Length: 382
Image 1: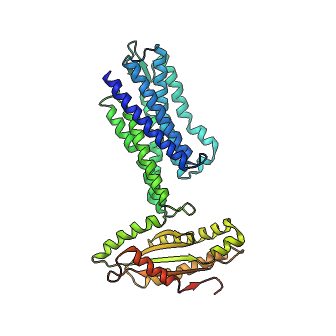
Image 2: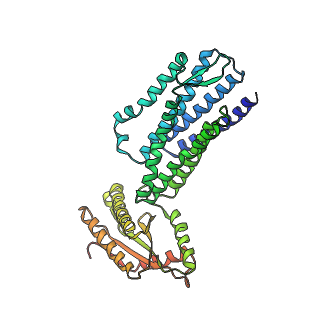
Image 3: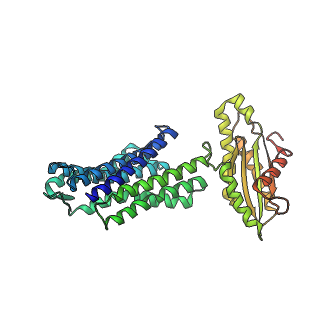
């Protein structure tokens, strides 16, 4: 009775928290978006909590059922546990935009181990090949339980390794952060699996997966809040704390100069009015590509500062390097404009160097850049 009471409390908590996350995800995102895949993982964890509670009720004599029902509950629990890892694998791979996620045949191929596991689980009623349930409703491990374990861990392990590797290679800060967030998903279920060795009847797996879902959901939500939906770059909300950290380093002795650069499309309103929102978005994306190219080359930090502006935080030990960066901006923007025959992108930029004497915040640094932005303009026609 004590074990059932403990399981009941924990599983109800799991269902409440996962229901909240599912509802929050459903309200804040389109049901047909990629976040629908995330909700599928949530639903499987909810099913895991339900089947765990059902087995606890059976094992503790709370729910008296025929032996085949006990087998059915265990089949459901073990298969749902495997499906959590499989559905997370699909979600994670889709987030990373892996090419195989666009080809239906691969879903069939990757689901074969899950189907084989389901068949073996059902066969366990007669053979005990994965597990068996005694007349007194005690659970016993079968000779192929390791196969079930392998299916459980292989899918999330593979996508975790891939996400972690890509987090060090991707040039976009937002993507790197998102990939590391996804890679951390396996942490709590791994702890839960370890705790099962101490008490195999406790709902550690369902609760571990729940904690992983909470951690990754709010991490992803924070990433979305701090990123621009059109370009995927960090927005101004993320820029300020980043630059503040650099400024803190410059309060003491620093061999590098800190620059903040603002680049603005001055005719974006006209482009939108004459050619429509699609072409206006295209102009913004062209400028975003220029900024991202510069950030990669100069180890700078780029952000979409506002509708028609981008910001670049840039540190350099060479004072003259800012001039080469400015010339590179003009060159790349000119090259981008040549790709579009419908209109010319007019732009201007301004920059400011952080001065510990006259500046005391990010705001003062940005104000200087904005003032200079108004006084120097470049366009393709010049």
